[in-house]
Length: 111
Image 1 (cartoon, helix red, strand yellow):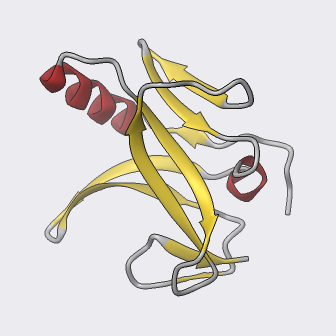
Image 2: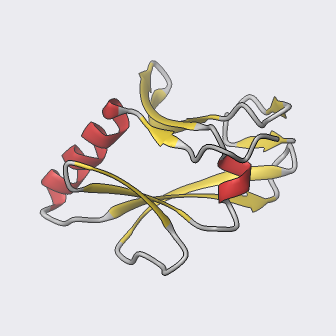
C-alpha cells in the first residue's frame, strides 16, 4: 500500500457539496471515514458534519471542505472521492486503489 499521496476530491464532488450546503444555508463538511465491518471487512462512512477535528486532513475548494480522520487516512491513500448520478440513485463514491475487492453496494471493501 503506497501511503505517499492523500485522497483527492473531484470537482463534481465539491460542486455537489456546495449544492447541498446552498440548499440548507449551512456550511457543513463532508466527512469520509473507514470503519471495520461491512460484508467485505471495511466500510466507508460518508456523512455531513459541522466540526473539524485537530487530526483531520482537510481537503478544500471554493470554501467546501472534505474531512478525513487520521485513522482512515492510510486506507484512503491515493483514493478519489467523487459524486455519481446513476439510475439507482445519486451518491458520493470512493475509487480506492488500495481495495483488493469490494461488494456490490460499493460501500464495503477489503484490503
